[in-house]
Length: 407
Length: 160
Image (cartoon, rainbow over all chains, first blue to last red; front, side):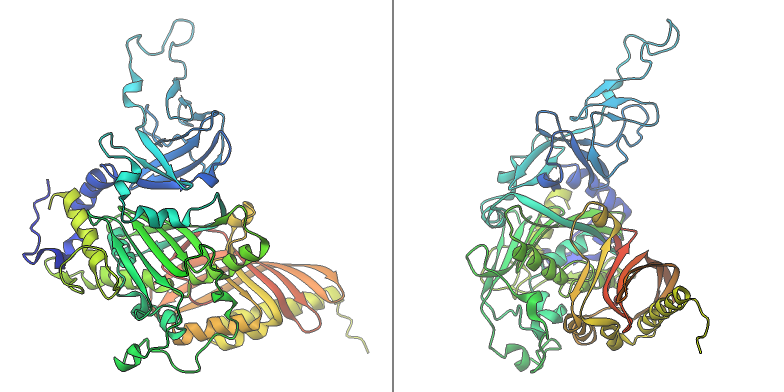
């Protein structure tokens, strides 16, 4: 049980111990990642055929996602019932069955223990007693649901359906992107020197985008003066923000003397990296969507990606990027997506700073666990709106986090 | 009078010298020189061994032509924010495979050590350079940087 007091200001303050405390980290694993939340696991496109599998994580817990011979997707803890070793050590592949290398205990695609080596001994000697029940320690099996080719899982039997969990504010924005079968373009991992929640509140922070990421404003890609908005689920857990394609001609940044103000004459020699085809027909240039606890879907022009946030300790987070297109993309569209991939990832024109900024917070707060962030842009409300000069979605994250953590 | 040096050896030395000049330019923050190592329409991309093995086309960083490379450097200098850092390239095992009189392929191993301003020093990347070099200009027509690991620590600002 956590014995922690939240600052009296409530929703507009986040104390820094949330990013620093080992006990908080352990409790998050139990109450959030292994609790009644849905976690992103993989794309269906990564396991297209029966018997295909990938390994992934739900929080700290290693997980196997496998398609059974009948085509049904299962997810189960990658832990042998016998001594706890990883059952599957490959990152991806195709398998008839899964055998733990340690003592050859074997599992089917759903994670059911199907064979214990020498269970009955040899020639009447050795083996397990007749009433032994090794199945009692079988790998935990997750409930699995998919939306638009994204596979999610939960250990909770009480959690509502995935669509109910996401809710009516954010679900249509997710479905807006996932309109056709997906095709994986590639993956990589960005290692962030900070607590996982610093990345999530960075993603939900619509206020920072055009101030930290100067590429946005210098090239007038996304300014807060452009039309856009933010959607936040009623529990605060999930969010979506979007910006329309309208070119900004205003000078709000220049008037405010911003560091990120555009300098006239600063433009790309080769603008192909920005040339967008309006593939969803709604003139949205950028949409960033997050699902609690650790999933982000982005549409940045024609770059589409799933980002999985994997905590690796209080001050280390892995961000697993999977960039994708649709199976019916023509060559021009694929090339566009590959060029626009320059905008995102560890070398991304508009995302490379996120790892640096969140790491700066982790280092900056080292001496002040009792102090707190000031998150007061847009007041103290948590909700949807048409301004992005707000921290409403960040407050939403903490509203949800406190609910799960009971602090 | 001919020098008597084996032409294969002479080409080997010329390619190794190109790789060395490239490495020194990046390591000494002469980033504006970086596009000059490529042909006008030269291609540069950084990917991972995993993406290569799976036949996936995604790059971590991808530039087609010097203009796009100059954009990358302009952005690093004037838009992107990152902690001061330097690289030290280590190159080895340069193997050549001549294609024809005007193109040679090169494969070379590399490791890049990253040094932060507080002295923190790590092996940031290791992998292979897969190059197509045009002769006699000695410029990269294509340089594919295949990183052994799929992990990138914090961010990748300076090209590898």
